[in-house]
Amino acid sequence: MTRTGYVWHEIYSWHDTGTYAGLVPAGLHVQPHQNFENPETKTRFAGLVEVSGLLSHLHRISAEPATLTDILRVHTPEHVARIKAESDDRGGDAGDGTSPFGPGSYEIALLAAGGTIEATRAVLDGEAENAYALVRPPGHHAVRDQGMGYCIFANIAVAIEWARANRGVQRIAVVDYDVHHGNGTQSIFEADPDVLTISLHQDRLFPPDAGMRHEQGIGEGFGSVINIPMPAGCGNGAYIDAIDRVVAPAVRAFAPELILVASGFDASAADPLGRMSVTAAGYRAIAERLVVLARDVCDGKLVVSHEGGYSAVYVPYCGLAVLEALSGVHTGVKDPFAEIWDSSPVHALTPWQDEAISASAKLAEALQLIVPAAATTRGAAPR
Ligand code: ZN
Image (cartoon, rainbow, N blue to C red):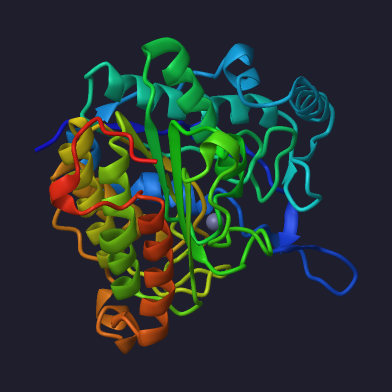
């Protein structure tokens, strides 16, 4: 059993994304409903963590708000000031016109970034081997000068800069398996050779035309960005293959001191936004591989921060599977959807999925981000 940290705070569910009909605002011929990004997926995940009994095996980490200094290491003062002003008034939008928030979301967003910092702190200080920060709003789309895609502040980027400023960590790898491209994290670190960002995502889903293979970092950071755009329809087979053939060898070659994971469950078979078919068993397999990888390269130091995932009924089982893999605790709670989805032929790797994954692997290889296992030396910085 591993000591696994866990962050959750009730107020994450008070972040109000308004009256929507999924992706579009309610209106004359659009009956009011919820935004796809609503509290349910997270509160039900937190609920299952408790009801399953797993909570009593986890090391609770209290969420503390990120300070202005923490946020300003990543974001522009103008962005932060605008979010605060709108939040102090009646609420506003994170920046792209489709990411509404209500009054008080500034403070909640500080707590989301701060929750990811606290999880990172606990892991770096040896309080926990690994940790899951179940935070909201998410962060991986937020760029330096604005939020977008439901994200206000870049939680993982803020935690990375905190770790560098306060714990002297230098080399960090980010693995993003949210179905959408981790454009914010990429843009913040694309010129930085010490932060490797890897994003596995559905090809050109969101942001449109982002996360292409040829985006490989800029200037000194060239080679520190890996994108794995996957065709719609991928199941567990393709995801596991991408982890084995691209993510794991690249992270091993990079030899980071810490791995952060952007954990979105919107590649799930039940998601209204993604067009993938990953199941809880797939997420468990991914997480088990990341645990092994972290143990091999950085003494197990793995911090997972929650991102997207919009199926209220299925996200809890995907999340529980990841937390079980991190902690090594098996609650015995079965994924009730497994019988319906796990035997689908969609999980076999197809030739076109193989081709997409191979193309990303080849690019990473060319950049020496993937080196033959025998040549990998810990601490070597191949680029
Ligand atoms: Zn997403």
